[in-house]
Length: 374
Ligand code: M6R
Image (cartoon, rainbow, N blue to C red; front, side, top):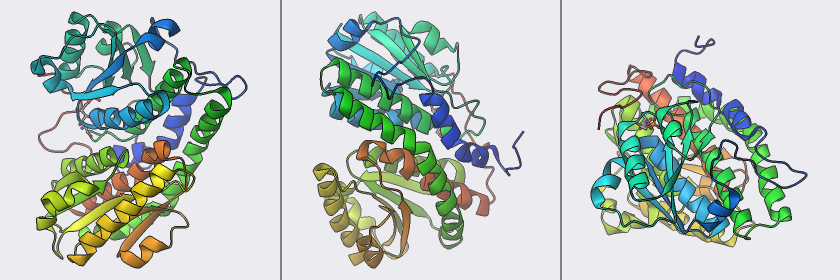
């Protein structure tokens, strides 16, 4: 059942190109430029009229939601709030009947997420679920479901479900962008084309970064702590990289917005601290270039204090290699899709470190695949 892989997690990491292809299958047309989200009881007018989006989710799905916020705000200029599902209900949310509730959950059975959905419905919102299990509770309770087609995920650490959720969120952002008159056909088709190139790019990342991550695991498996840094849409990926590492290798890890380091965490840096920095860039996008420049200065702040940097950078970037000890290159893509590539080496790094430490990768201590208690 592990298809020749040593663990389900590794199999599921390698399944990501397929999972993303399946999640996009039949969901858009390059001819018409249209997006088809499928199982929706909410019509286009209602979607177009949403005043904002409230996302609630847990763990990895929450990180997908954070990245989704950047996608939706950028492509549709619609405000998005992202809550931990376990917090949403208790923060006394301010009712807005025109806000659309969006639940993101692999299992569709997470108790906190279901409770947040109930609260949203009580406040008068319609809800949509991004879910990997057909017919799961969250989808039955929702007015619309966008299923991810990652296939069953067995490893407790979520991998292919995450990149499939990012794919579904990108499609939703496209749809909302079109409905709100922010994306014409030409722009939409260009974005769809880039999305359809993504699985092949992930295949390349897998091929190139696997041996690199295996090697890095040798150097870093004894570290006591790790930091993961990123800006903008790369920040939730830093959080997700850190979660993968703590969850399966039991090494303490923190994700931080790169620009916040000088406001405190810089004090942690010394020659024993590995710092993973997400530093990809999209040359054609001025905002991405600016973020990249700022990230380079953040890298220099770390190296000046002898921190050991592992950078994730775009192919063809020769600057970074001169600044840091280790670079993992990923293919160029548009910034909103870069998380799908960036997370792969972070999953592999966590995996190989956990294996070297002799941890039970598929069944980490104290954790369950689906968390049905609040
Ligand atoms: O099934 P869900 O997506 O609702 O699960 C949410 C979290 O419990 C889950 O993502 C958890 O954080 C993973 N173990 C992370 O790898």
